[in-house]
Image (cartoon, rainbow over all chains, first blue to last red; front, top):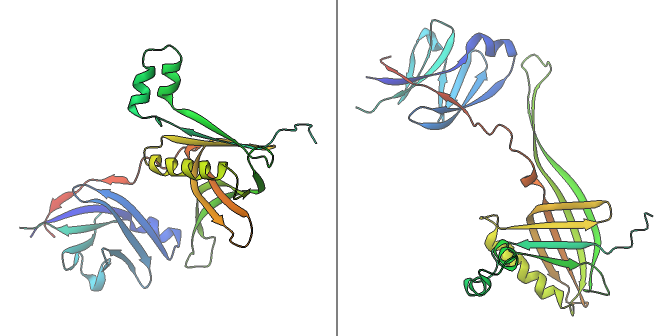
Length: 86
Length: 180
């Protein structure tokens, strides 16, 4: 099962801002322009295409939901994955 | 105060307004050919004696877009601001009998047809208020059935004189294909 991974933001840098939420808009290769809503609550989560993707949820890294996945990489960046159709 | 006893003037410039037959008729004639090819400016003097159209009021406005994101620790919020538009709204009063009222309505229809292609511009000069090559944001003509007056409201935008900000668009993100 393959995913297209996109590096969205640095987790530590986002938490240092102290923001409740922030939108990141990127032009994703092979997809087009998409917006990611990053929210700070108990943990940090990303809302992408109406799918809620918590970072490191219940120590699941990566965490998958439907056709999407989220993971925290070794460099501290949050990546969102979109499942590649087989 | 400045001794400039000049009536306000609205200049509507229509590009390529002439039919092909008219263009062909003057093709090859020096100067005239160039003028016809470029379109023509249509000045409308806003004078009660001359055209029956007078300026009631003109208003300048600047629209801003403000996006405030609060911080979790009630600190200084993240604020992003964009200039949306700079507009001038001109309210005109005119007599229903004025011959320029149908001319004005016809010109506004010409503008409507050329809006997407951008083949028009409007300039407005009234004392200290001068706008050149503005875009039309809206034109409203209202007839009052209880009197012989009609009112015209024109909103001109100077957006075409500003450079767009952040024209580069969103950042490109490269994908990395792999398993979970």
